[in-house]
Image 1 (tube, helix red, strand yellow):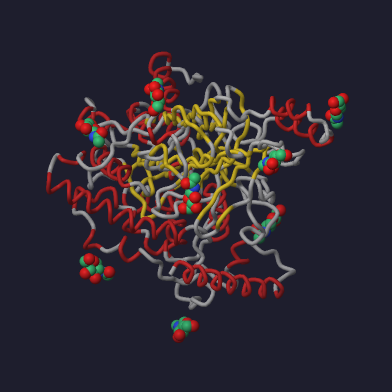
Image 2 (cartoon, protein in one colour):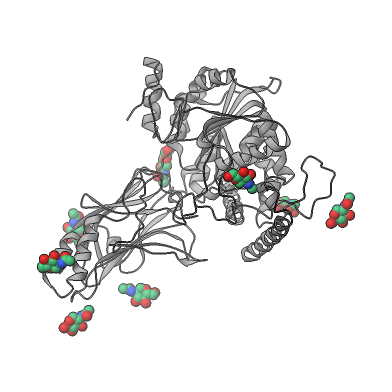
Length: 613
Ligand SMILES: *[C@@H]1O[C@H](CO)[C@@H](O)[C@H](O)[C@H]1NC(C)=O
Ligand SMILES: *[C@@H]1O[C@H](CO)[C@@H](O)[C@H](O)[C@H]1NC(C)=O
Ligand SMILES: *[C@@H]1O[C@H](CO)[C@@H](O)[C@H](O)[C@H]1NC(C)=O
Ligand SMILES: *[C@@H]1O[C@H](CO)[C@@H](O)[C@H](O)[C@H]1NC(C)=O
Ligand SMILES: *[C@@H]1O[C@H](CO)[C@@H](O)[C@H](O)[C@H]1NC(C)=O
Ligand SMILES: *[C@@H]1O[C@H](CO)[C@@H](O)[C@H](O)[C@H]1NC(C)=O
Ligand SMILES: *[C@@H]1O[C@H](CO)[C@@H](O)[C@H](O)[C@H]1NC(C)=O
Ligand SMILES: *[C@@H]1O[C@H](CO)[C@@H](O)[C@H](O)[C@H]1NC(C)=O
């Protein structure tokens, strides 16, 4: 079924491209907008025109019927987290959808089914919700148990609710000398053939030094098998892209190995090499693998050795177990920094943290702030609720803040998320699983919310690791136009990344032009209501193109708005700090929950936008 859908997608896209290409040749002398490149001969402004041949068509996606079947929807108050969801069907049925849409929807249907039955079960049996499932817990460990002698594919640690940024897994172990190495794997949830989100294969030289010791990192999925492996030492590979600012491969490891190559006959060098290689037979090691912002990185005996960027669809929140194969005697295994939700019953100040009711009769909100978050980021959301969501403008209902969260693949996470949504009334769930490549759909959901559900004069997008000075944003907006506005850290002249290894790689099929129109950086930007409306309508009518970098996508749509509706004011403000915190910030990015609370405290006590570190 999936393959079939994929085929239809590809054929659909090919047709669109062919038609586009044809018209491109015809009209070459004229300047082409990207919009025309994909949708030739079409006038958005005249609805009556019959243009179905050039618009992306609607396809049936596995799981959509289930996700949008109203007989399965909770009723009234309980259905509040599904307000935006209810209006997203068309968006998800497009033949030109984003890459992982079909999978994200199919998996969401499964997750939703499980969540629904859990909700019903709980309703029936009242307080028994903890009985069957494992709770999310901050750490799990296995010490000296029988399970610690893995002979084959043993899952040594179950990760109850996925990994988040700063989660880590530490193994204290001894390579057992009988086999030429071992593999540590972080695996996903699916039964028989779970995806391998990180494969960490340590090859040791063997008895006769017949092999070069090497660390090989990779991923595996049932559909696509192994990915491209990344070796360490990497013999002077030019790929020195860093992950979270850490080298992919420790230089010392590389140097020793290069020496070894040119001195292959010199046996002494094996010792030299072994002393630089962090693992050796019979020697105890302590290895910690961290989940960072952009990838995993490993420290062995206190030294950073390797890092590995997350791959598409293989994100840390999916990890549900640690598996070990090969010759390794494990002394202890510990996973810590894992996501935990705060038990709503134990939170004293729920009423103060709960989103204030916006009465139906009240006129338009001044500002809706949509925050991108993901299922198991419980702690980040609580930090926001206890900090900048306490600004007077938010508490009084002039500004509304809502989290936009896709479903998780883990039952327990979804259930705790559901309880959180019911308790704080500030969560909008999305009818797809939270893959990175689907973020643009959340942007559109925020626009739907800010125009159709909680109509607002301005709509803002931010992230759950950002601190937003709501009062300052409002003060700043007072002096600005309420028509055709894009306000944030605006990039006027940027180019698509054509380097395949780059996180923001865009192919020429996805974006043919050598430059992007102006756009505002993702951690925080504000658009005016007319633009939000244009975005919603454009996607309803399938006149706007989907693009996987959500912030650039908004820029692309705004360029279209400018062409068809009216002038746009791109207002740049350097106080939107894209890459951290700077004094006098209006928005600070990459702030962990502790820093978020610290920034708030500084704001309260010193009334100064100073940074915390
Ligand atoms: C491509 O970029 C140039 C500026 O570099 C711009 O003038 C032109 O309109 C763009 N074309 C498209 C299709 O966006
Ligand atoms: C629109 O296009 C469809 C299919 O190409 C065609 O069947 C229909 O008659 C057209 N409608 C109008 C109003 O032109
Ligand atoms: C919705 O669900 C009900 C009950 O599961 C089923 O009978 C009905 O056919 C479904 N409707 C659609 C449109 O799929
Ligand atoms: C889950 O947490 C609750 C308290 O929040 C506790 O009573 C229960 O025993 C826990 N269940 C498990 C399986 O740890
Ligand atoms: C670990 O297990 C072994 C054998 O099962 C036992 O001899 C040893 O005492 C245990 N060590 C600890 C610290 O429990
Ligand atoms: C591991 O499993 C494979 C396949 O099930 C089997 O062939 C192999 O002998 C097993 N190895 C050990 C050490 O149990
Ligand atoms: C190592 O060398 C010994 C003797 O030279 C040989 O019997 C053995 O097969 C070798 N082992 C490997 C793994 O090559
Ligand atoms: C090879 O080994 C010799 C002595 O063991 C050393 O002096 C030399 O630097 C090595 N070659 C390289 C390229 O490192």
